[in-house]
Amino acid sequence: MNFQMSMRSKIMLQVMASYSVSFLIAVVLFTLFKASNVAVETIAPANSIWNTVYFVSVILVETLILILLIKYFKKINFMKIIDVLVSFFAIFGIASIFFSNLAWPILISFIAILIKELWNNFWYKNALVFIVVGFFSAYIGYSLGILPIFVLLAIIAIYDYIAVFKTKHMVFLANNIIDKNTLFVMDYGRKVDYSKMSVENKNEKKDIAPAKREHLHLGTGDFALPLLGVMTLFSQSIIFGLIGFFACLFALLITIMLLFSKKHIALPAIPLQAIALIIVLGIYYLTLTI
Image 1: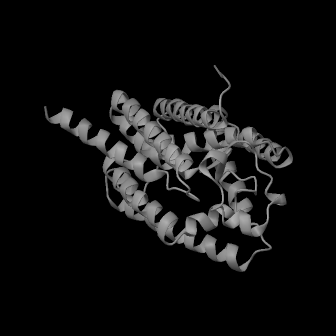
Image 2: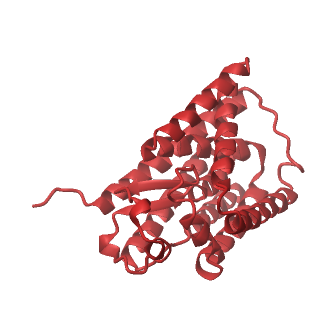
Image 3: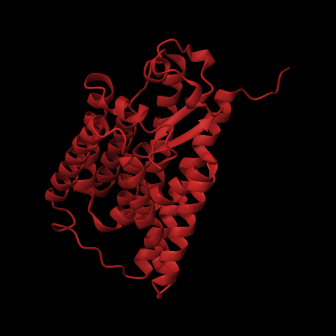
């Protein structure tokens, strides 16, 4: 009997561990925010749908601007600039909980980002992703109500499907950042040297058979956006927050299995997670009426 684990199984386990770590970080930070009575300013009351309108508008406008910048200013690495700013904000926000003197959070953020840039190690980069995802999931989940977050998830799920299968601009963005060592993409499995890959193979991977896949790229949003809903639900009910997390994890693993079993260039990872989480939310509201 062959007990050697396949690369596909290793990837699935790595994703499970990564998602779990991100969730645990979010729970710890959420608890710290709550214990410290962190004040969060929003554009509208926590349960207002205008918060959803705001987030959707920001996502669409920023995506459009980013595509135009990448397309017409190819010599400037805008993704790296955004990557550094987002990383700094998240790490600074976490460090600020523990230090009243702002000099320490600034120094810690600077060192963490400098190590990532000098040491091109995808596990260290992934570890920073977990921290960033945990921070934003806890921060936004702490500050907003259930209605705007779940409407946001439903809209993002539809948008993710359209962006991958119809307009395909999400695939375009992914192909332009997977080799840039940014926190926008997580790497799993056997590392691919994109510097030795032709432009045609890099942008068109239709010749890759499912059985030959030995790597996986997951967008940071594939973790972060569903976890926003999980943490919002967690703020209302710890039990249903945990159920929501496992539902999202299961849905994500199904999506990855579909990617490995079909000859797809890419698959949207958010739709199945959003559906799973909305079902959990429906059950949660049903229990409140009983």
